[in-house]
Length: 333
Image (cartoon, rainbow, N blue to C red; front, side, top):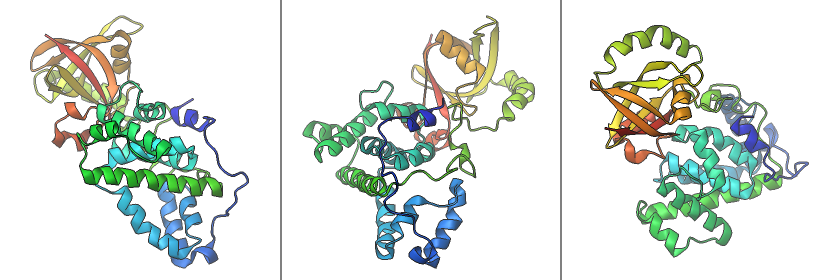
């Protein structure tokens, strides 16, 4: 069972059944809104957009809500923080419609499916960045008491401005408001949403968050790897990972894109974290890396993503690595 299916099976989701508000049709929505929904829906792989079908029944509210919602969602918090906060808010509210959409959309903010699972565990989940812990704690406090404690506020102000803190509160309130409406209305995800259409790649059935097409790894092994292995040990940002097979015990060498930050090395995973060489390293928690003509041992190997490992990634590289999982390891002399 993949992560999305596990989320869907959670007992925390609640919504009116049967629905108490039916989606608006052409007459209720008006021609312009109805056409806009029908044109946008195929982008998500569905025949409609339930949120718009429901809120659009009141034309005045709908057209006032659109600029408000857009302003709150596209605030100065940034996409990764916005998605993290949205997911936790939806989880706290038991709002499956919201959560199911943002499980997929959060990939565009750089959140791996592993980080989404950590969001469901809360601020104490292992593997989170301290900033992410503070954000999740603030979301939980806003949900429970409608305010952020002074201690959490101090943590937030270490990396957020006063304006950002205000945006955080408005963002949580916005998605709690939507959760109340959507759950009362009985909204459920649209059939086919994110499982077909141009955004179906955002999450993979194997939870690998693979970016490259399925046909490319074989071609890569047979052609590109044989060429890259000649220069990768000497020409950064390329390197060669040395790893031992989990079953065969044989030693293999795989060219990768890697860069070093202090005692740690970060390796991009465009083929996801289910590749054999990645699994070999995780299985033994040790291996080697050839870089700049020198072989180093690596250990403390783990998988993460750009928002979680932001401290290790030079700022100009973060947009380039945003859509891939990352392997991080400690380099030994």
